[in-house]
Structure formats: structure tokens, C-alpha cells
Image (tube, rainbow, N blue to C red):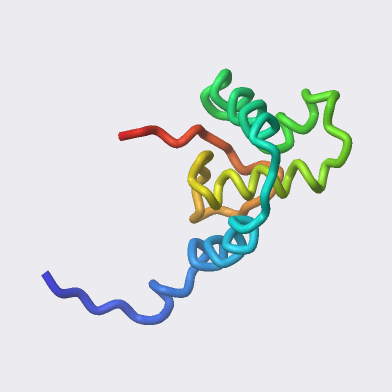
Length: 98
């Protein structure tokens, strides 16, 4: 089936968020740090970014860790709802293999 969408259906929050995440895909982080963050999210099944930052006393730099979360989302190791604002309230989930 062929559908016609106007520009408002194409240029929305999801597109803005995808563009935002693109810059984080190229950043490199140590794999052990990535595994630790993914493990924290997996243990709870869903966690907000701010919740993980608040419970992890080992975080030296909040901005760096937030960038690490966006990297994990950009590289499809963690998932968020890209139709909503990406901020501290974003709910992170581990990407399923389905």
C-alpha cells in the first residue's frame, strides 16, 4: 500500500532524537564500563538514566556517563522510546534479540 505523509509526519521528535544520538555512536568507551551499565539496566529490566546515575557511587563524571548511555542507545545495546524527550527521565531497556 502506498501512503502519502506530509512533512509533519517525517520531521518529528523521533527524527530529532535520532540526529541527536548519531554523534554518540562514534565515541568509544571501555567495554567493562559498558557491560557494567548494561548490567545495571538488565537487573532492573527498565531504569531511568537519572536513577542509574543516583545509585552508582562510582561515577566520577555525570556528563561522561550520560554520554555513555546515549552511546549505548546509538549503538543499539540499550533502547529508549525515541518518540519522547531524551533526558534523565528516559527509560532505558536492554535491547532484546527478538
